[in-house]
Image 1 (cartoon, rainbow, N blue to C red):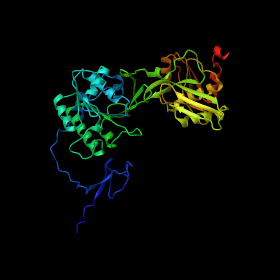
Image 2: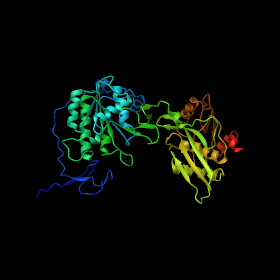
Image 3: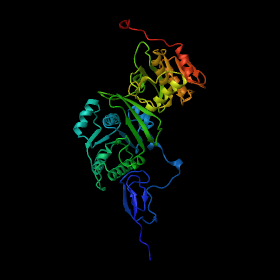
Image 4: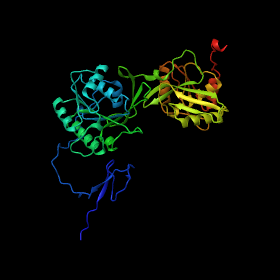
Length: 460
């Protein structure tokens, strides 16, 4: 007697299957996403007509897949040259970071070369028009429609014939062929699949706006990131003007590039050289500050690290950080106290960066240590000085990636002296480099040329 077909269960997030129901997916660890999928279908596939014959790869033209510049230089840098016809880009970010503002400016730029269709599902057409007037992003070839139905979107695409399609956002779109509420797993998967099919068949560059969850990950099924060609993340502090655009996935270019933008009242402005945002403008050196060069992707950024060391009457000194990794700061303070004899156990230590930038790479260790030592000894570091290097638990200064590129960027901006790890190589003209092996050696070399700040008349 033939056995009855077994029922399988499938995860709605990642597609993982199991023979029995479980509350948590064994692949993506999501709760409540495993649903009954019925019996597995027989694994027999009949031959069907082909849509296009197979050709040697050398005979396939690449002209239709070349990137077209968007008109926004920083966005083109991250995309790898521009938007590819038929490519689908997912732009995600927190609410209010400036996603819609950036894409509206991109739409206005691309409208100069051909029709652009902007589908808004979160705002009315009048609200988007008001923002476009404020940004100066008005164009006769920029078409705007407030729709939430994927079927209506297809009708607009047929009518306009755009070269660029922007959907803001994918979580608001609804497909009549799928069940569930807007923004649900089933709806997002169906809508994204339909948009990708439209983009590929008609050769339309498409940009989708995506929401993020509380922990900063892209909302919706993980499959959404696998379906699209490019995944971009737009980030920035709410109280800072700096915005960073990162590529998490890019089938057409590198993923180690970042775009820097400044959020102003008139819109978002690209920053080809954003180093000025991370430095404090002052005439005289101040104790507790040290300049370093951080790498954001492949771009070196001149940044300033500040530290304040002050006595405290409390039995447990405070350790407060802003823009720096708290555990890393505590480790550097412990190395300073153990390897250099500096007394910090009864001191409050506050460490911060300038301009709201976040520094997490180990190359900032040496600058942080020197800033803390400068504040503790109340002596200012020399003018035009930078420090680059990783500090180990043994007090050694280790080399970091791209150290020559960092020093060259500092020399380009007028810095004249650098403390770097050993094995730096040939010197770079215009900047004097001092190679060190130990943290104590770096502090000793700088202490000879450091000086106490001038006192004001009120202090006399």
